[in-house]
Length: 206
Image 1: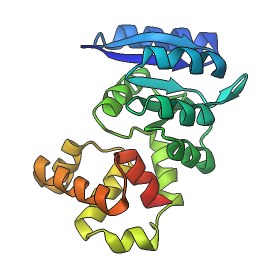
Image 2 (image 1 turned 60 degrees about the horizontal axis):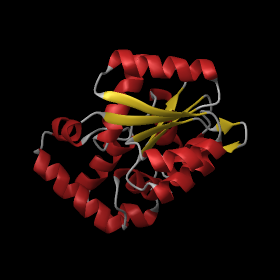
Image 3 (image 1 turned 90 degrees about the vertical axis):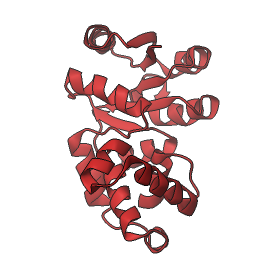
Image 4 (image 1 turned 180 degrees about the vertical axis):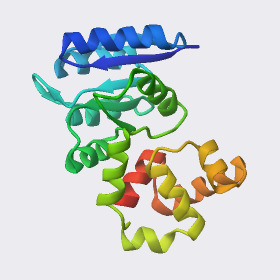
């Protein structure tokens, strides 16, 4: 069954380019809708219920981050990737807090966009390299509460979650089994009182 994607982007040229990239790069991904503004997105996307939404931040009638918050309430299982020119730390953090599961800059290479869609569907948190570095450098130290709760191994896993690593990648980097990673993730979620990787990252860095 193909992964369904909806685009929220006001630039017609970018929309056409994204649709073409998705169609040519990966047959297992299908674009089911394109919205050029917030109003259309809020009307159309809940009916489409796509697996993934590619969301711009600056839209003609509103803000993509606020739209992300509203769509996540209606479609909690849909993953949203911000796709924008904005790379300041405040916007990145607000987007993650709103429920975004990834943050890509518009200069991202075509193959990386397709990879990000696949990653976010599998539970990853894809970010452009510069964005990941900003997140790490700006929030180098977690809150005292989060730090006290997590074990050393859980701290290591959180650092890898922050840069978007999938469970298998975490297992490979730490030389532990996939089941062990999933067990640690379960404990992390319980300790931070969250239900997803993105929520864990936001809570850990807040």
